[in-house]
Amino acid sequence: MYRFASIVLAAGKSTRMKSPRSKLLYEVGGIPIVARVARVLRELEIEANMFVVSYQKDEIIEAARSVLPLAEAVDQGEPLGTGHAVQCALPGLPDWVTDVVVLAGDVPLLRADSLRRLMDMHTRAGALASFLTFVAADPHGYGRVLRDGAGEVEYIMEQTECTPDQMKVAECNSGIYVFCRKWLNEAIPLLRSDNKKGEFFLTDLIMLAVDKVRVPTITVPESEVMGVNTQMDLARAKHLAQKARVRRFMEEGVCFVQPDTVELHDDVEIAGGAVIEGQVSLRGATVIESCAVIGHGSVLENARIGEKARILPYTVIEDSVVRSAARVGPYSHLRPGSDVGENAHVGNFVELKKATLAAGVKANHLSYLGDVTIGEGSNIGAGTITCNYDGKNKFHTTLGAGVFVGSDSQLIAPVTVGDGAYVGTGTTVLGDVPAGALVINPKTQELRENWTPPYNRERKPD
Image (cartoon, rainbow, N blue to C red; front, side):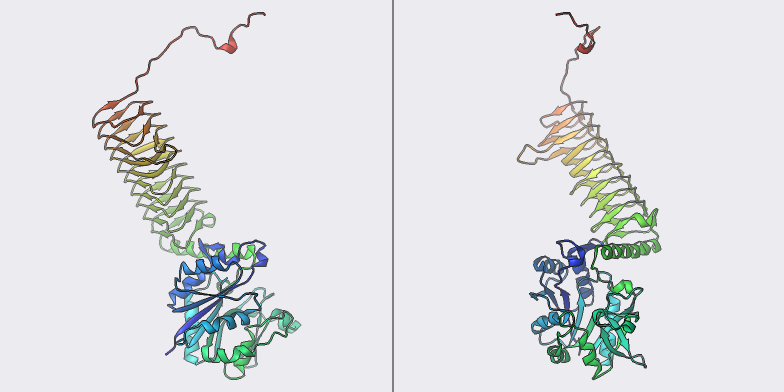
């Protein structure tokens, strides 16, 4: 019976990124690169997972454990090559492990199906070593896969060791292997560092395996096993991941008005019939239900948008719910904890924070509604503010059903306004208002006829 463990090589300093941040912590599709690799291992149900770390090790293992809580960290210290990394991890593997998957932590587009095919081929062949290859459009920088006249693998030659003829070979090593654990324990001490880099190359194991038995390979698309080493690589990985997601949703009936301009995270779900306009950013675990429309330039993060809801352009929604047939925007901001009910309207330059609006509520203009519950069918006039913060504590405002709040009103929390009450224009509500009541702050209008502004008055001589 075969039982697999993984060793993920995640110790590099990411020098080519020209950034103090490890490349493994940059996000593709809203997920750190190393966490995307961890997702593949989780999908394959690999039980033991060792992450070889060094630079920014705490942050990297934290990202990996967000997906694989039982992942183990192995500190490589000063990295001395891929062979050295595996050598550091091997002693920590459980005794029951029969075979080991070795892969880099910087392959964000790797598919679980490809790795599963490699593992299956490896076990069927009873191989000592197996690996993924790809045909590179530009093989510069990659280790070349060199084969004999029968097409069998002879060895992998690192770029720095290649002859001019070997440089022309387009089939390259992906750096993703499966090894027989027993043989790996025996072979890894045989690696030597007498090369131009002075490192222990894992690729040398292939030549050792070939001396004993055939080494099988599977070829996958170059894009699937691309490593992220530069900012340009990162941009390309993001583009390819997003393109695949958009294509999948379009096949399921989602309309993208300008598909190349949309940002789309991996955990986003969109139902058929929805319309996503240009320059939209859908982040986190956002869910868009059928026939909803997301307007141009809107940014949604961990939002849930109901069926036939309409989000008008340049709206920002965070950790909030917009229910069916509601309308929000343009230029609205729903901060975390907001819930906009069915057929409710939240208009331009309205900000909500922990606000629950029942069905049919209208807040169409220029308002701040924070820490508030608003009953069905209420109308909130322009310029209304819930004054929920006293400088130290937050307080709640409750409005019943059918409440009318006139423009330029302030509700000083904590306060409750009963069903059907009417808040007059420009009123500051300082205390609770019973159902059906009118609350106003009486004001006296002063009129001065034939008044001349000071700047138009004739100046008297000194």
